[in-house]
Image (tube, rainbow, N blue to C red):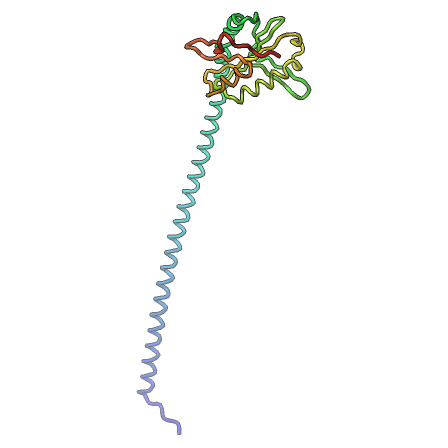
Length: 216
């Protein structure tokens, strides 16, 4: 037989239901608070991402400015190198005739940057010091290295092919530098080249009086 439902039973049911509603409401409030905290963290994370993005953009701008400065410095160094080369040639060229004449090579003409093309190749002589029977090819460097001497030896070996008007001349080689790397001068002298070095505000031939130059 079914037990009769009393008012007390209904009241207890309402109380239990109310308790469950309150517990559910509490859980909803906690969940809502957690969502708010998560949303706040997302906003903070977004702000951090925005700040990081701003910093990256500033760094990128810094790299662009650094690149611009490097290009400008490189351009200025290039110009300086060109002007320094002109200065060195301007200092050495006026002294060449006297220096080589005193060494028994009676030259009387100086041609800066003598250029010639032959087929698809070209040759440039920094200073060509010559007369009708002899010519001295001078390679001028602000900083003379052993590799520069090797390159000039190759240039000397090909000179008459590029400049046939000097085919019957005796050809001499010389290298010059305001700064000369260690052993570069000895390397050049041992291969029969004159070495022109700075001496105060002038230049001089560093080879001793007994030096016998190589000819081509």
